Image 1 (tube, helix red, strand yellow):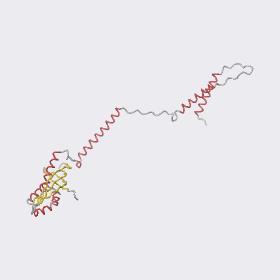
Image 2 (cartoon, helix red, strand yellow):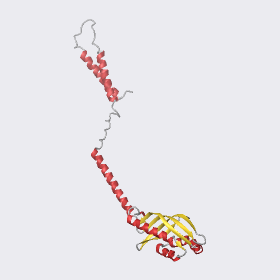
Image 3 (spheres, one colour):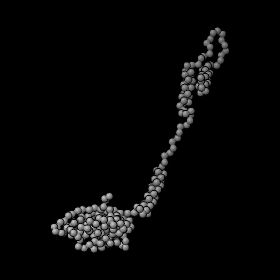
Image 4 (cartoon, one colour):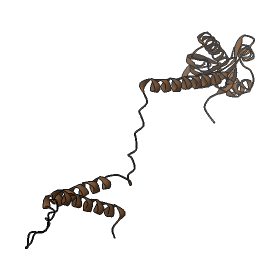
Length: 245
């Protein structure tokens, strides 16, 4: 079944052939007697030209994509100033977010730790707690009141009972064995420092000397952590953790 386009092309082809015939046919002459040649048929060249013209028109019609619709146009690419402007806005937004996040961290009491920034306070707590550990974990059978004074001065809160449980056997055996316990802190580090609260990791050497009938000395190393609080300008041990359950 022929389409409308083919019908139109056929009409154009016939019109072209007719025009070619008119151009090649001479003016009508008076009829001659006898059998003369009839009107001349259109030349083969004219028919081929008409067919070529129609074929070209068909090709042009078939070459239009999507029923003759115009091809889609590409959007122009953004210019460099526009890209730089967008990047500036993004970087500014990130900087504002980072500043707000840092401020919230500083304002959160649970996340404050100035152990690495407050050098003066860090040095203060290390010095006083080192002295406190050496005092409360040393015991001389000949001067028991010295140990009691150290407990009152350097311990507070639950650290008082923890210390009593840890040195209970030393106190019990000290008079019989004439025992002298000496504790020396070899190193310490401040894990957390938040205002008047701190947590420290302690490394210490202990020397236990028995001066009874036969003198005997033993050595041991210890590692534990302590929580400290600052009261009246002095750091005191508030909790002792020996990492044992």
